Image 1 (cartoon, rainbow, N blue to C red):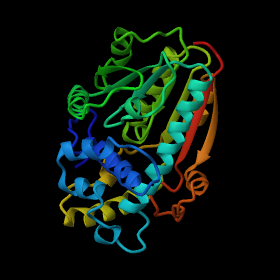
Image 2: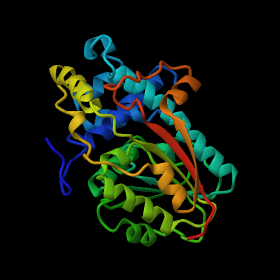
Image 3: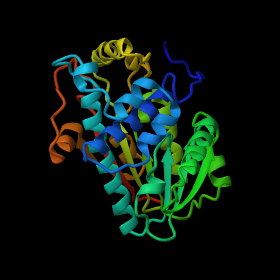
Image 4: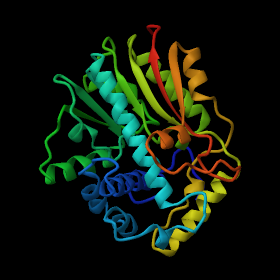
Length: 304
């Protein structure tokens, strides 16, 4: 189904299901000892999507759900998520070592970093997502008896609404440097909404703030490859068409856009990140999805 500006979803449908898929990938990567996220699998189980639960639990093999030689599939996704998780975990560790004690996770989904990372004393983590997602994760984490490793402040608001006001109302300090994360988010926004989000982040940020983002670069037929992979998943009970979840249109390059707005960006291509972690490289032929993706970290050197 084609996305619209005001569409709705939950953790089992449309773009919301990608949050559950990401958690399933983190759970599988934890089983493979690539990362350590003990909360990912129980969160996926609580959502109740059978395909994702079985992948998270190691009950499905890539041979069951991935076409041989395909440019994309569950195993490639899991490898990418493992590398991405390590990269962003390291980003937060470096921000904490630099003295940053204010963290904002945009579209936090089933992210459990507020419970699994060793945050410095005095750190506050703001988690922004739709109210139903925040409510679900908060309740599920509580049932698990998990204790946060930082002060957690949920901000239940749709990013299409006035989230900056909601963030400030939750106690966010615009005078303090912040570590921001936009993980797996920007590619699911319309091009103009991507710019608006980055503008809002810049306006809310004090000098010395840092940002990490996964940058989706338009790749032509990549959506066809995603939908081909999705067809195999549908045969195994997962009704999702990944190639239809983004928005068409040219978008500004994130690193260049940030640089024009006072940030110092650094790009890390996806395949460099995979190589750094000893993981198989993503194919770079024109039909391969995510082949041109990169990861961006940036530091704000000009006060708003």
